[in-house]
Length: 400
Image (cartoon, rainbow, N blue to C red; front, top):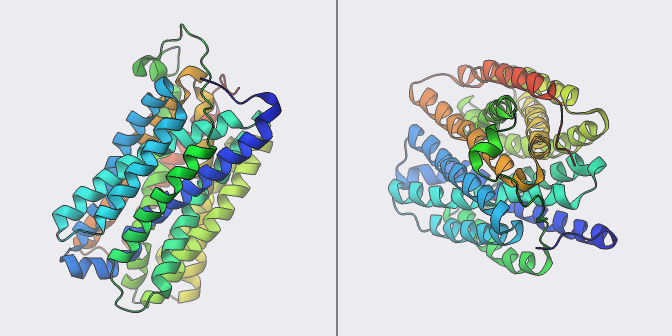
């Protein structure tokens, strides 16, 4: 395999970042799609509240499988082929989601779509980090992952401007066709960034994650990922419906989802840049403190303006923290197993992505109020803050 030569690094790095941003936009669109389609999808397929939550979680279950397998494969055959195959995979199964005629079909296609999401994510992290200079590595990775809320915002905008009573299948048809168009672009522009070195390195997953004193780091990293992803996935899948549950109009829910995603983009960029300048501890802890305050304020908010404003602040906090965690994860693992380590963090952390929509669905099915549903995230955010405190107190040993 070849690496990015020093003389060609700026051009190749720009290509990697541009293509990965496009892929992240498409992933964000498709993950948000279930939330924005839910108001028309649920009655069409006769879904109850718990089934809506399960539909949001199925893609995350698939993502766990895809991230674990995709990271492992990339450390062996290369980042580029695994990333391209993953994009094609989630495009095909998103198109098939649009053909769903029952709850069972919907859940199956969402599970398989998620496998493609998962295969792509650790490879975007690894490629961006390997293509970037060390002093801009966190900013580069967070710039890629802010594409996800941009895609979520695009899904919310599309739903907002479509006529009332639009066919929910259109949302998934768009989300499936676009990745298939990107595959050719990725094949043409992406270089391989995996460097074949340290030939004697032990690439077995268990050793990569827990060998050489990395057990505590791996476990705290996983905990931080899972805690933030509970909140992020709940908001992506449920925010419009929770706003409607407050007695506000559907339009307010769509605007709140849009604000959550757009201000989340700013959060990812601002916090990522701050991590590059000051290190990860205080920017991440400040983001989580803001998130906790915003979620409590959102739980108590009543008027449309306050709901939108607090949703926006929650987006800033949760995406600022989560995208920076994506960016710093590779530094805790040596180069030959970097995608394995990042993939495992994405995979295990995504247990939180399954729990988030399911938690909201089960609480609502049990007749919990919107206030109680949102407020239950506060202790989860606290667990994430403790994990970040422990993680960032450990030495960074593989930040090259």
